[in-house]
Amino acid sequence: MGMGVVEVLRAAWIAGILPMIIASLPCSWLASFHGVVLGFAKRGKIMQPASYKFTVPQKFFCHFYVVAVVWTTLLLLTTWVYAYRMVPLVSESDLYSTLTSQLTGGSYIFSFNKSRLTPVEHRYKVWQSVFLLLLLEVQVLRRLVETIYVFNYSPSARMHIFAYLSGLFFYTAAPLSLCGSYAPEVFNFAANKVAEFIVKGRSRMPAIEFDLLESVSSLLKLGWFQCIGAAIFLWGWIHQSRCHAILGSLRERRDQVDEYIVPHGDWFEIVSCPHYLAEIVIYAGLLIASGGSDLTVWLLIGFVVANLVLAAAETHRWYHRKFDNYPSNRFAIIPYVC
Ligand SMILES: NC(=O)c1ccc[n+]([C@@H]2O[C@H](COP(=O)([O-])OP(=O)(O)OC[C@H]3O[C@@H](n4cnc5c(N)ncnc54)[C@H](OP(=O)(O)O)[C@@H]3O)[C@@H](O)[C@H]2O)c1
Image 1 (cartoon, rainbow, N blue to C red):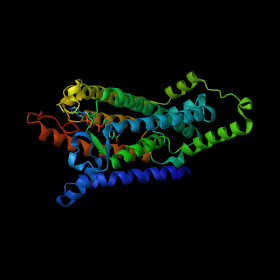
Image 2 (image 1 turned 180 degrees about the vertical axis):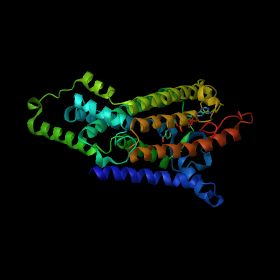
Image 3 (image 1 turned 60 degrees about the vertical axis):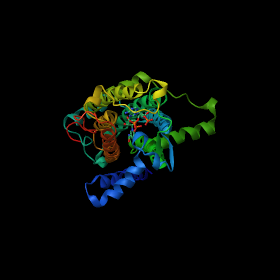
Image 4 (image 1 turned 30 degrees about the horizontal axis):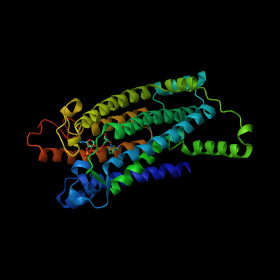
């Protein structure tokens, strides 16, 4: 089952990335393919009213984050309890072993060779999945609040039904990609607990012991890759929340719900889509915190980059078409590159 989950996830990410890469190639004979891919990806201001077939309101974005919060919370809690009960990372030998492994460029840092994991490295990787899910939880909770309270979606803003379904898929597959290799053992653990509960009944079930302080201290002992990854994640997280607050503030008056304005402030001074850039920084933080040894996490960030670069390029062109005085020094998404 383990290989099954991981393989399905990888195949899905590749199937999502390839059309976007092909559509981005600068070949004139690919123009119509580019149009088709963009037609599925367009939303909000870059979607023309003429292409309103098979669309849903853009404010349905909040459905993505409801799914993301429920699913990420479930995975986080079960993986955390599993790690605490079955693969604790607390003994001196564990710490010595993981530390030595990191200092000597251990086999699990930026290497795809998972089969060489020792039992101690395996424990470490399970705790690392808990850490990654915790970071993702912090991100999707903020995004849920923003879609409800910060953004003022225009009543006419739409997205293609395909983009809507892809978004639902994304927020199911992304949390799973951060713990996919260990998902089967976590599911087995949870299934056994549920079966035990059904057979024994609530009164005869042993209480689940869970010391929050002890398990948080295990997370704090993970290592430098997690510290650096979390710092990069936080940097992107803070800038994305600032840029979203700026976008939300553009339509504070009731009569402005359908209006588009040139945003200013924070990373908007250098790129047209700083919130997309911040999203890439957030996922880069997750990749670094994962140690870079899991191909599934690389494919996840590949999908995020391909998707957001495509949307940012179109948004940048839209700003230039719509506003004559649009700042000429802004790039689309990556400063000084594109
Ligand atoms: N991980 C991924 O693969 C992925 C994919 C997609 C999005 N996201 C993230 O989700 C977040 C939102 O994405 P999005 O595509 O919905 O962003 P968006 O199209 O920029 O829209 C965000 C909100 O801001 C409003 N807005 C945008 N530009 C405006 C302007 N110039 N004037 C006035 N209002 C403006 C939009 O209004 P309208 O209601 O009129 O559109 C909408 O309410 C981003 O941070 C992005 O990184 C992530």
